[in-house]
Length: 409
Image (cartoon, rainbow, N blue to C red; front, side, top):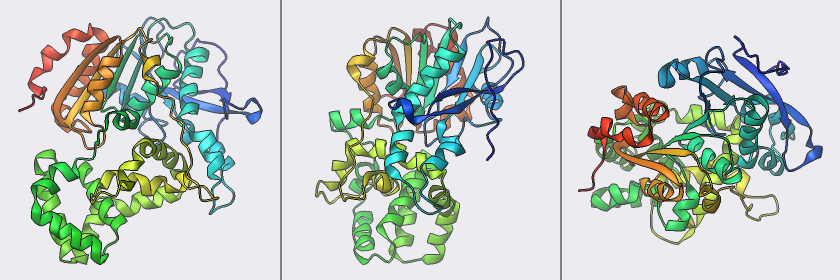
């Protein structure tokens, strides 16, 4: 990929949608050099409008060249400037820096360059260099991007950002602190299905299909099956694995895009993803090594993917630093809206309850939905909640969408 070097001259952005700013390769190392961090606007910049910065993390690629206009149309409309930061993980120059050769990666260097500390500082660089004269700035992020926003506000609690919308907030640090486990496979399926547990025990013992593949299949299933049909689909998949039905399992592999994802991860595009997943799994890794006779597809899949980052060449386990600090978050004065889904297999809704108590000015809305908010999006109301919060007071939004609210039975 050829990087076009474009330099920001002033804030007269006019009809310029895509540009770049110079930022350090490593903010902790002044001698690391610089690279061009790219960004893109969804439409012509209008200084009279608030600016929403769309935040993605290293394992998200929905903010990419040519995509921000669509993001603006789908989620925000015409009342905002929408700015997407095309993350450093998309930068070929940086990925080349951490390659030893075509088949080997320097994971020490990769961790240094692609850890979330660097992404956090990239956000601040965009605000300081590009939006220094913009008075009204909002942040939006979902899943890993939402986690990155909480990391950003931990490092820069005095940020000039006025409002923050975060949805399906992944937060392994909170999970570890509270003893939570977002992976619901054990408690919401196996615990209620003795036959499935018996079948799984035999599947894993016989190893006709590897444990890694079994975990990957059940983890990916969450993204392809509606919540209401999930346990039925889990039962059917377990039966095919138990019967060693290779043809059916191969179809699942294709339908769930497992081989395509594996090929992507072994490419250099997978380098920043593995670093980010190491940050996800590190705080809760003890769950996998506790000696419990448990099966956690999501945790195990994250661990396998992140293993090259976690396992250093000298045989030691890399210590991962996560710039998340609740005490720093308490100092942020802006408004926060947290959208959480009760049946989220990636981000435990209980960690969002905790987060809502950390922020000074926060509204929490727990909905009867899943990690990707399929129900909200299918009805076109996901964008309505976002815009409602950004345009109004945070407390007025929930009453308009209370039909989605989850209540514990």
